[in-house]
Picture 1: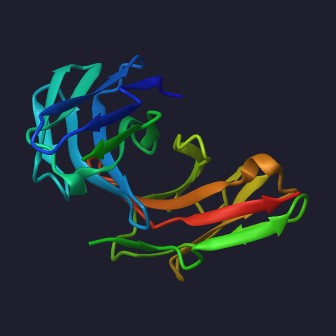
Picture 2 (picture 1 turned 180 degrees about the vertical axis):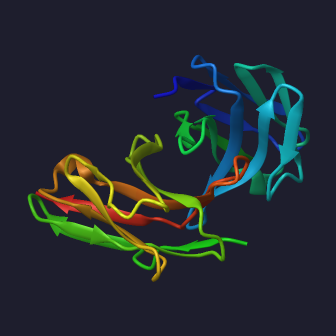
Picture 3 (picture 1 turned 90 degrees about the vertical axis):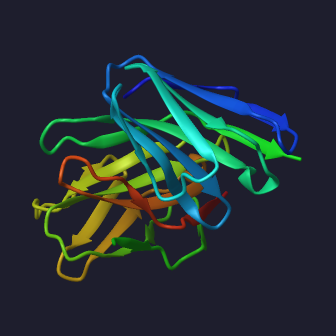
Length: 114
Length: 115
């Protein structure tokens, strides 16, 4: 399984603040993802990256930005946090190869915006 | 667009019994993957089992197995000899096999194993 780590694990911030959530992986996967989980809504895709130079918006990218600093690092930023961005955020990496695509998730970051 | 439906928001079962979680999906494509993920109270998302649509044989991982009915677009998860550690949210997920497609998740089923 991919070794995916996320920092911080929990974060409380105030409306209007800029914050960054970080994700690192040690398995050399090119593909990385950021998801958001809200109660009753499952996981929704925010951004994804297939390599350092390939970054794509997901279904709910408004209010977020990302940076792929290296193959192993994929950061999610909230430029000006708002209360409805309170959620559980997951980073994931994906194995590739025909018929082998599988996503593995980090432990999540719980974000509370006051 | 693909959709995934989990019609059982909550389920509970006695320890050691067998339980089946339902999942249906909607797609016009024929090549895709299906997954079940487990999210225990620790909130980690853990891959339970994976099925490739082109394979007729149902996937099995120890006590976990699936019933994949492609024509009916159904992908249920069976947990045999349930254990207290199986208590978790279970999410069904779908991914097209085009090499660059995202996961689409259902809304989850909260499973409680009763001692």
